[in-house]
Image 1: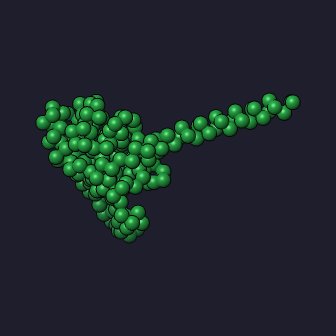
Image 2: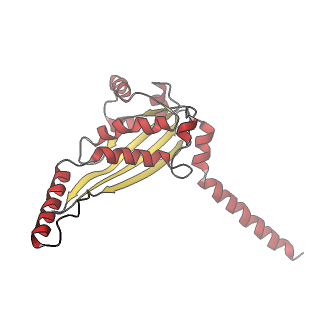
Image 3: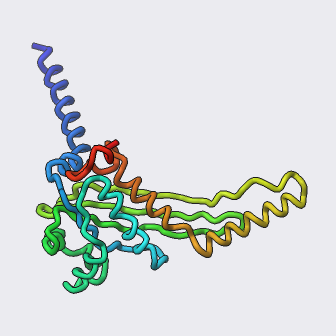
Length: 222
């Protein structure tokens, strides 16, 4: 009889452990259950100081999603339809009903992106360019969050190590580093970073990425 309380305790621990495990997988399970075939990418909310950041993101996002096997609505057409519907401002779009947005295009899910950081910091001999992004996919019918991810990438241009060990060589190397840093500050290399961030966000599956969609090919899976 004394063994019964111990048995009940073990069953309770196992039950709570199972619930915790299922809680961690809830978004993944929701995504697989929803099985979206088409994804609508809405205009990006840009919280950075770079006014071109949103354009970089939108121009580089369709390809990695299509590679995962989803139909992606044409970015420019989506923007035009939303503007005609009175949704020209991206913040207004993000605060609108997901079901309403999806119904305008017949989409199964909607992808929202918020740019949290997008800048370059100049430090004479080097420039550090940073992008930080928040992604979220919501179901068109239930408006539940099916998937979300945060990506942060830091880039520093690499200079060649030539110049030898002489003082003149060192001076030349420092001058080259300063020039490269100034060029990166004046025109940050954002396009490759945007591509890298989008690929990293959606492609790492199982893990933080999204599952393959219905239109993926065998070659794309490999």
